Amino acid sequence: MSQNNRIYCASDHGGVELKDAVIRHLDARGYDVHDLGAHGTESVDYPDFGALLANRLKDAVGAVGVAICGSGIGISIAANRHSWIRAALVHDETTARLARQHNDANIIALGERTMGTATALNCVDIFLDTGFEEGRHQRRVDKLTNL
Ligand code: RB5
Image (cartoon, rainbow, N blue to C red; front, side, top):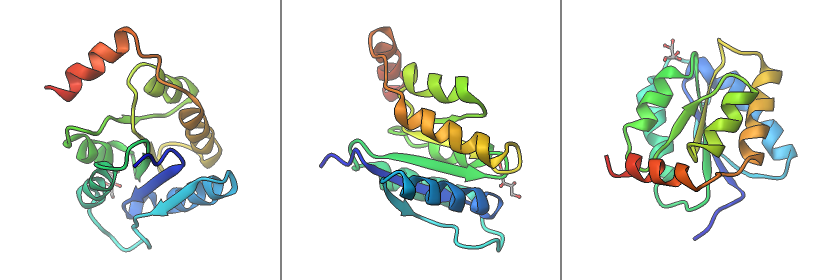
């Protein structure tokens, strides 16, 4: 089933405030937003939330994810251990755009402690509004899937 308007958001405790800001922002933009936690600042482990997000995306055709931890590094590594995930750690407009154009990323990863909220929300908007360019990039993405 196609879920082109659906966005799953997950974070650890280090990303929960930015996750909540992203969810408010995406709700206001009319997306079908699902909050997978964490739901507070009590210490949790980013691999659990990266895996939770990856597994929710497995059969959700067209849905995308937002993954946040303190740096964005740990949760993106966790998500990328799943063959159907292409999680891109993004920090500015260029990386947000290229993650979609060249890599067909299905998760945008952000660091709450490494970027401001306004920059993060702008990156999310660019990520969601940019399409995959296909062509030579499709061949490379196919190779990722088959590694
Ligand atoms: C948690 O303190 C922190 O290590 C985590 O949010 C993340 O930055 C790991 O990559």
